[in-house]
Image (cartoon, rainbow, N blue to C red; front, side, top):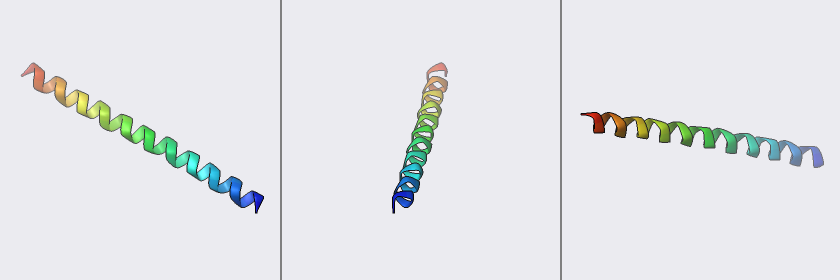
Length: 40
């Protein structure tokens, strides 16, 4: 049981980091778009 719980925790931590990086990429793309529109 303990091993299984540790594995689940590691998976949750990994998906949390992955999700955070995804959000950051989306945010950077949005900022890029706003900058391009401001230049026009």
